[in-house]
Length: 112
Image (tube, rainbow, N blue to C red; front, side, top):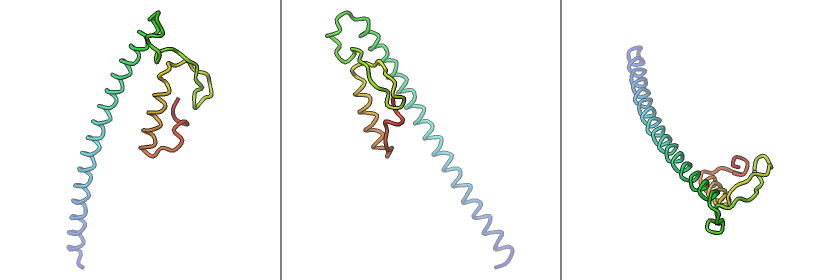
């Protein structure tokens, strides 16, 4: 193989790597967009939940909002007692289910 053939092979490899790099950049941009959209969705849901909890806290008829009544739970990571609504077990169950789907072992080590 001559020097020109080697240079041509290196150029072709370089172009293939550039094309792959551009594909990866486009994929990263798409994933970042999806992550940003998810973050916005989480922010919206968090605002809704906070408003619902505040409304439940302010309501004198706690029986009308059984999931919003506050209970004490043990924080999974810190072991501290935390005051959460009775809906907190729903959060934990959904968190753990999603963690299992993602292949995360022992989700209680990373959630509250």
